Structures are given as structure tokens and as C-alpha cells.
Image (tube, rainbow, N blue to C red; front, side, top):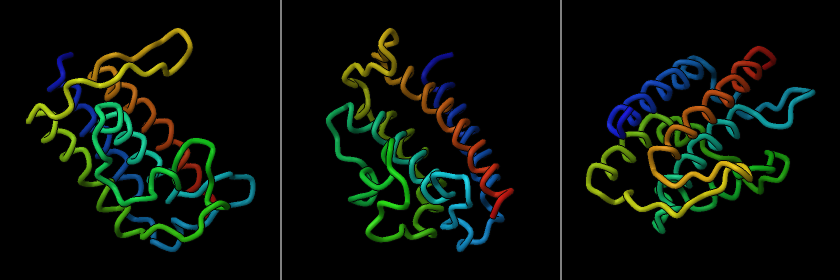
Length: 153
């Protein structure tokens, strides 16, 4: 699979995630059911922020998401630590648009030189293609978490 195909696959994965949340009322995005650590808003924000981290931060570029979203939605965070809640309409828009932003920026050559990132001790990611492929797997895991949350809100 070349990078163009990888990005198209990422767009397909994103369409699945959008389909999962499209009919969920905004207020339900902020409910953390008993037995869960996060809510739909956190999972969606985490998908977007993580994908932007791999695409932009590792290339030394600013993240194209609202300031503070990275810290709010980072690994090992939860809505319990939020000072304010994210705007659900904004999260929906970012979920729908950020993959196209990444595709456009990659096409313009802005995302060609990521710093290597050690995902696991023995699996360094050194290319943008590897990072996008991982982000698809990562998104699928969080899409599963979102589906479980939807069943409990």
C-alpha cells in the first residue's frame, strides 16, 4: 500500500467513526457511564488529537486543532480532569475535516519528515505511512470504545 492508498484507507476508517457517532445526541457525548473511564467526547477528541500529533507534532509543526485539546485528550487523561468541556459541534467538525487537512498537507509536502517515534519498545515508526497506518488501528480501537459507550448512555 502506498501513501495515497494509506490516506484513502484512513479516510474510510474515519467515515466509519463518523457513522458511529452521527446520530448520538450532543449531550450524550459528555456522559461517562458507570464503569467507564472516558466518554464519547474524550474518545473522539483523542482520535483527532492523536492523529494530529503523529502527522504534525512529529514533523515539528503546530497541531491544527484548538489549543488545549492535546492536553485534554492525551493518553492517561479523562473528562474528570477537564477544566471546561469541549464543544461537541467543534469535535464533530474536526472529526469530519481533519483527515482532509492531513491529506492536503501531505500532498503539499508538509508532512514528509516525521521524527521517529517508538510506539512500543521494539517497534519504531519512522515514516508518515507507518504513523497513518497506526492511527487507523488506534481509531478502530477507540471506535469500539465509542460503540460500547453508546450502548450505555
